[in-house]
Figure 1: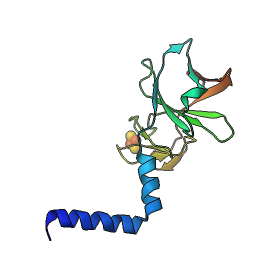
Figure 2 (figure 1 turned 135 degrees about the vertical axis):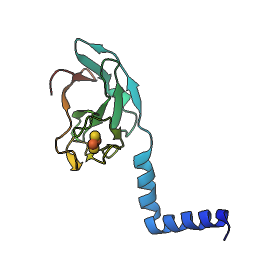
Figure 3 (figure 1 turned 45 degrees about the vertical axis):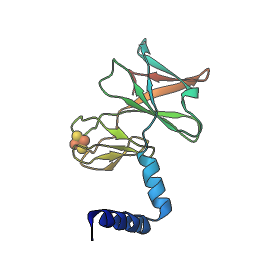
Length: 144
Ligand code: FES
């Protein structure tokens, strides 16, 4: 069997094993998340709620004063989680998807509430206090 045929056969087999829906959701969860660069004012970040496009529920917030990004999660009750994307195991940056956060250093994982789902990390992520006001989400950088 030639290499091209092997790859084609293997990929078709994988799709068959995973099932179309599973593969689609897997690919969806790996899609890049929207990123918003913002500046801070008096230790707060102001994020317009309109930054969440359509059914998007997660947004990566970048701020030059922060060493790590924040994952802003819109919950079903229209409140927000602002999770600091720093692994609590050994302080490495986390990668985020629509379903959770992952650390490539040693494999820890966290859900969208910041709770550990896969060790070695044992502590939840740092969570910033949020408040909604005038169609904006205010993230308080000092409080957790
Ligand atoms: S630093 Fe993240 S799992 Fe070790």
